Image (cartoon, rainbow, N blue to C red; front, side, top):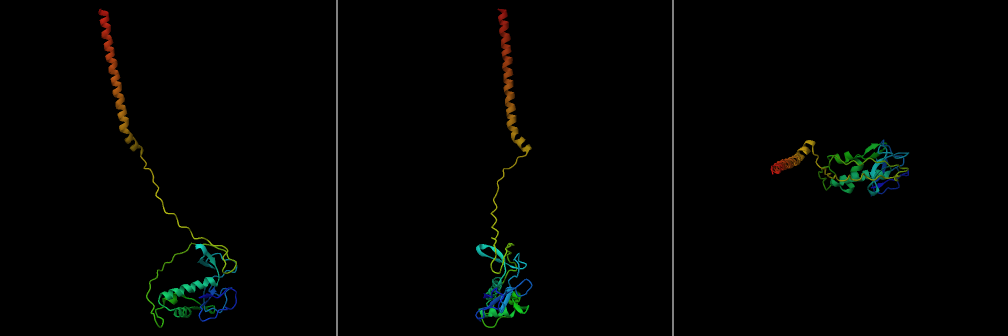
Amino acid sequence: MIAAGNQSLKSAYSSNALEVVGATGPNDEVASYSNTGANVYAPGGDAPGNCQNSSNCILSTWMNGGYAVDQGTSMAAPHVSGLAALLLSEGYTNAQAVARINNTADTVSGIGRINAMRAVGATSHPSGTPTPRATHRSSSTPTPATTHATTKKPGSPARTVAPPSASPSSSVLAVAPTVSPSASAQAAGPTASTTRSRATQIALAALAIVVVGFAVARVATKRARGS
């Protein structure tokens, strides 16, 4: 599997050992930069100005774990490589997979553009062995975060965007329990009551002492007068 090139020329690759991949633009047209004469074509994006988003370019993984939008036959070739990998996983040989990709391509704009669903979804088996085995593929695929990069020419994005960092694990925040005013009053009740009780006892004891002292004083006074 090899990219045809981005020089708007005829592809220089012609070996039967190679599956040469050209690029199509957002409207299934041959991309303005793509070399012609490819064995098969796949979406590669085409933005004569600058790549702004995935509507006219290809959102792809990039260096250092990032993502970028870009255009070029280098964006088209991975589509075909991925399709070939699916066929190989079903038991096709290399030659059978390449033939299957080419024979199930849609004819658009005078070229063959891959049709992945037709390639992997047909019920007929390729001739020879091994027989493709039944596989189960999930219909849901992860969607990378939308990123934007600007490119001036195919194959060289001006900037890349690192993927969103993993969110930190949630931490548990301990919160002191709140106490309602009534609960506070109830909690403080026994202590206040005890204090008032003690104060009353002290006051009564002091009064008793005063009364006794007064009585003793009167008795002493009477005795003094009698003598």
